[in-house]
Image 1 (cartoon, rainbow, N blue to C red):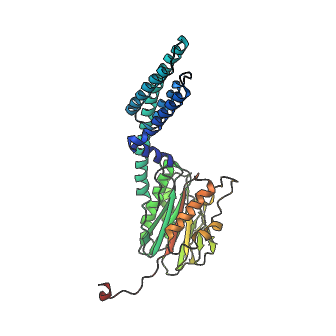
Image 2 (cartoon, rainbow, N blue to C red):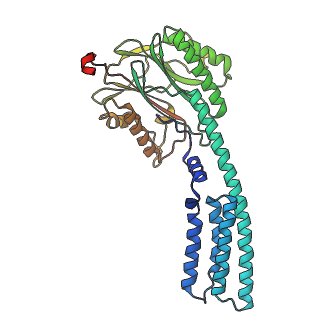
Image 3 (cartoon, rainbow, N blue to C red):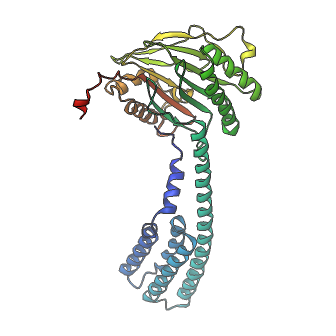
Length: 382
């Protein structure tokens, strides 16, 4: 399971803050060594010591302010030594030398300020990411690899790079009426979408235990969204129930149709016979949402996703990700290892988009657990 709590840039900055000094100082030291060698082998007739001015800007990228001042001071010493080696006999040369010293000192001061701002920003981002990760985990409580008789694998990715929290939602619960799952997609992003996700998930966690039918669960969700969410917001959702041993019950609320992957690798899109409107738009529809059942036995995998997956565009030609076409070879030889299967699908999705998704996305794989073998005797266990 991978909730992806930090963007690559944020992880890099956090790692840089905690990296040992001997690693962070390598870049400015390498620059000092390179400038010294170039100036030395160019001979006294070439004044290249001024190239040492690259040291403070480079140090600002990796060092803390005090570290930068100390390392830049070493660079200043080398600049003076190299300048003496180069001669500097004329008045013009001395003016250039003094100008280089002033510029170097100014770059050191500016570098220290930039380093301070970089460290403050990185610490703020780490703090925001930590809080957002805690909020995300509280909201999307990661399920165990198996809930009741259903095995689970999930990938969640948020398009919000700094906070890593978005409006896609999922949950899998074991209830008195069998295992029940929900996947949904809130219209919009940001804190408003997070609040709506909290309303939907909170209502589902209550209704899934109380309502004997999925229709009752859906109506409870609709009531909560209508009561607590602004009228211009809506949420697409798909409810799944596993009460019977060889079937799955589904209820469609304007969401992406799921895929059923058979044991032989064939894939079928499960289009709803009677689709209903998304949550929050129930006042525009007549009647009640009605679930339908599909065969779902051992060896089969039910793939649920949000539109961030099927609407992910190719970096080359802008085409949508062809999930139903790409799934068979990615899942075919995984057997009961759902975690490997979802990791392959997610990796293929990133290859399609060029390494980054522009929208929140959830991939949720569900399969029946393998039946346990006959119990062993106490003698054999001993």
